[in-house]
Length: 225
Ligand code: SF4
Image: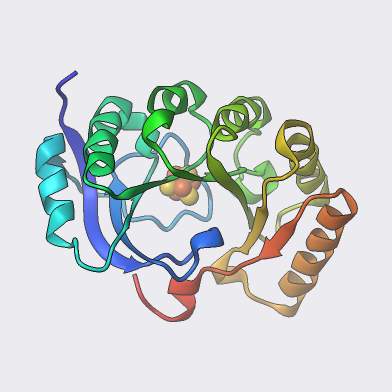
């Protein structure tokens, strides 16, 4: 299907989150999101429309030094037809396709997964986001994501409760206990209490046989995009 995509920005930077923390990547930020997390600070107020081939040409302008293209948002899977077309093109050019997603749109993931190399999936905890729970969607999503290299991320806020953490750990344990869980503190809530909470959550994960790592957002710490 021929379709245009809405893209907020294309830029080169260092991956600031998750297991690929520190890798130089080329970021393609998709416009639009299906959620409204209370801690969201993603700029999603503008977009430019691209044909898949036009976006590839823009990506190729940055070719030197990048082997990975990070498709981020917003939620890239909201534009699955366009995303699939671009993933095919970037893969053909030899890039690694890295998908950052809120882990809810599992049918869309099924449609594109053949062209994705790495999945960085959020587990949205209601006590962190201020939204309802998405456990059912996360379970289905994780089942699909487990076909590829994947890892999970929970944003931890002062409001995050242990019950949500335990529900998330149960889910990981049941679907794929070998996935690594990143505990990412909300960058605006750094404090001694937060550090103690992160340590406690890491210990609870370990006691539940899940590997959890505390990784803050690097780009915010060092003041880059
Ligand atoms: S899923 Fe991500 S982009 Fe969407 S509202 Fe939540 S933090 Fe913002």
